Structures are given as C-alpha cells and as structure tokens.
Amino acid sequence: SHVGQKDKVNSSLDFLMSHSSDLITDPTVRRAYARALGMVAHRHFELVLGVLGRVAKTDAATRRAGSIAQSLFGKSTAVQQAECLRSMLALALGYCAVYAPSPEVLQTKVCDDILSPLANSLTQEGTVLVLRGVIEAVRLTSDAIRGAPENAGLRDPFLQAARGDEEEQPGARLSQDPSLRAALC
Image 1 (tube, rainbow, N blue to C red):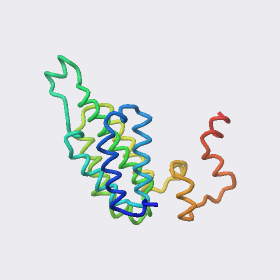
Image 2 (tube, one colour):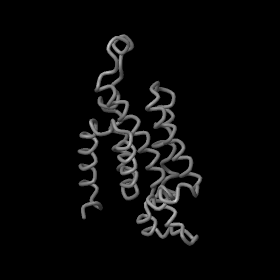
Image 3 (cartoon, rainbow, N blue to C red):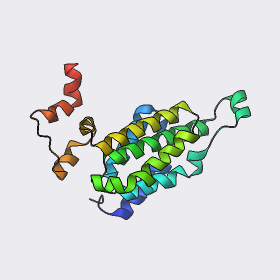
C-alpha cells in the first residue's frame, strides 16, 4: 500500500483538494471529507496540516463576495464554493486534532497549526456556514485536548486497535455501531 509513502499521500491530497469544490457544497460530503482528512492525519499529521494550510491560502478558499455585487445578484457559485471549502478546512483541523497520532504530537502542534487558524477564522469570517464549521472544529479540538470520552465514538475502531486504545467497558464497541444505535432509538 502507498499510504506510508509521504510523496504519494501528498500528491493524492493535493489532487483531492484541487478537485473538491463541486462536491463539498453538500454538508454531508463536507463533513465526510473533513473527517477523512483527519483520519489521514493519524499517520501523516504534519503533512495534512501543511496541505490544509496551503489550501487555505489559495484563491479558491479566499474568494469573497463584494457587498454591492452580493446585494444585487446574490453570491456567485465560486464564492459559495469558497465558503464551503473554508468550512470544510476548519472542520478538517478539528478532526486532525481528534485523530492526532498521540496526545504529545497534538500538544506540540495545537496552538500554531490548529487553534491559530481557527481563531483567525472566528474573527475574520462573517458567514454563518463557515462560522458553524469553525465552532464545531473548536469543540472537536477542545474535546481532543481534554481526551473526552465522547470523542471515542468519533475515532475509527481500527485505528484504536492499532494503537492499543481499546475501551475497558464490555459492549463499548457495540455502542459505536451507527446501525445498532439507530435501531435502538
């Protein structure tokens, strides 16, 4: 498998990020995309944070509507896609914190690479869509830093088994099964 090769992972991430604009307008796809980036960060934490930082500076992510044009014609498709991209990037930062390889790695990178961009987004963003993503990312990051038990359900059980983070409680894995959870509700 080429998952261990950083060059291939980097080129794959760059390709996915450059071709994501049409897909991430759907909120479910946006969340899934962000979570998948977080899962990749489990093995390539610094690489994913670097890709997210690069994408956040591209024209596709920084496009904003002018107030006169927006009031007359509404937001353009490019502006809407940029807002979705910024929301997804924020969520991806939160999921990177959740899926960080270890608490030590998270602690070394959380201020500069995760919380600073989120703080900038909180102060500079005016759209509700992006602010929702940023606030959710702050919550995910906070829970990851605290090691909150409710975050255990967000983690992939296969990644937990590889790290040896098995829960002590019997039946804890069953409670993470979405189909079982839906059947019980």
